[in-house]
Structures are given as structure tokens and as C-alpha cells.
Amino acid sequence: MDYIIIVAGGKGLRMGSDIPKQFLPIGGKPVLMRTLERFREYSADLQIILVLPEAQQAYWQELCGKYDFKVKYQLANGGQTRFHSVQNGLALVPDDAEGVVGVHDGVRPFPSIEVIKNCYETARTAKAVIPVIPVVETVRHLEGDSSVTVPRGDYRLVQTPQTFDIQLLKAANRQPYNDGFTDDASVVESYGHAITLVEGNRENIKITTPYDLKIAEVLI
Image (cartoon, rainbow, N blue to C red; front, side):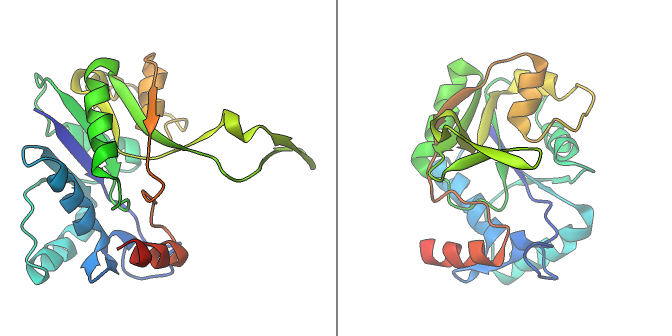
């Protein structure tokens, strides 16, 4: 059995909105609903776990009624950090479960079905997989008051879903939290397991600013 943990804990601060960014509409429907629908489109059998802060759950339920949202999922409470939110989501995955579990940003509604499939299928053997895209801008590394150009071909931008063997991610998430855990791959890497990269899709943007919202409307 495969799972996806969709983490949605944003407060919308960079969006300049009182409404958390995952609830803002694109193409007439909240971002988060489009994200859940994309994973249901990938697989009717995928077990979806949505992680939301308790303070946002009542509003989410209102939206589900308003938009007649029918995608089935389990709900977990958000934690103090992303790491703790994923822990809460993982707690709904049985301890003896076998298969692949993905973790995805709730404000990334445009992962391609091909990318999702590749992440899950590659993780069946590689155990820890993340989608990435090339850096197309020139990159400079800051060194004190100066800076130096670095080879952009040596770098990749990381996306989600990040997919893992269930038992591996559960074990890695039993580690004590530290500030170096910027995503789930960093947690698994800290546990000692190598990360495999697969090609992402450039449309798979993370919607965090008003500009991103405009791009999302174009993509819709």
C-alpha cells in the first residue's frame, strides 16, 4: 500500500493575505483541493493523509462543503515544524506497512502525473527519491562582503513529492529534531541513506507569493 502525506501549514504571510495560502483559489478552486485532486488522479488506491494545523481545520471543512469536495483522505494535526507535521502524518501509516510513502507540499498543485509516478516507482528500489530541476539562472556564492560565480550545473532545485520506503522514513523520523532538517530528504540523509534524484517538472511551483498565484492562474 502506498501513501502520500500532504503538508499544508502555511499562514500566508508572504502572500500578504489573511487567508492561508493553501486556501486561496486558483481557477476558481482552492490550491489545496487541486493538490489533493492531482494525487487522486495519479492513483485511485493511494492513501492520502492531509496534515493541517488544528486552527485551520474548521475553515477547511467549510471549504470542502462549499466546493462539494469529495476526495477521500485522513486528517492529521500540524506540528511545531514541518518535521513534526510529517511525524504526525506518519503516525497514521501502520507501523508494519510495506510500500512507498511520499511527502508533498500542499501549495504545489502542479506536479505532473509522470513525475509522481516516476518518484513512486523509483523509490521501490532506491528507497529515497526526490524530483529536481536544473538551475537556469547564474548563481553566485556570497563570501563575506564579496561574491563569486559558481557552476550552476553543479546545483539542482528540489521539489516534492519526495518518496521513501515506508520503514526507512519511519526510522529516520525517530531521530531528534535539528535545524538542518529543511525537508524530508535531509532527514533521511541525516539517518545515513543516500538520496536518488529524478527529473521534476518546471510547472511544479510552490505557491508562496502573489506573483506565484498569477503564474498558477496561467498554468490552470
